[in-house]
Picture 1 (cartoon, one colour):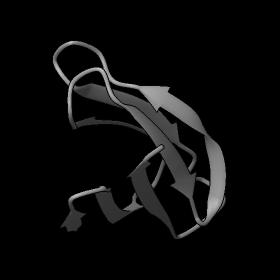
Picture 2: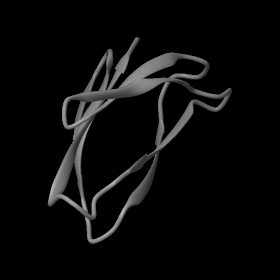
Picture 3: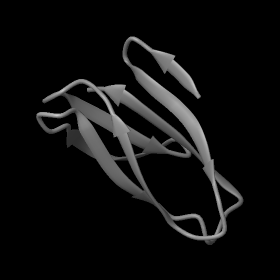
Picture 4: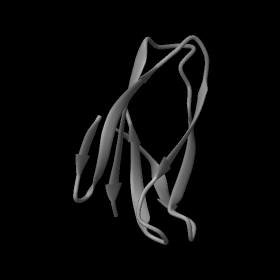
Length: 69
């Protein structure tokens, strides 16, 4: 896990798909990258929660990067 002023990055692994929820800044837009591929921009809610899914069945692990847009 690596945390900076602009976001976080970490690796996810497991035997099946995973639902990830992280706490970031409230009402802020972030860009989510999975293995370097931009999967879109997401905006956190009032509590700062950001949720997304990661497909793990076809790979050993996935690099996740979440940065302020």
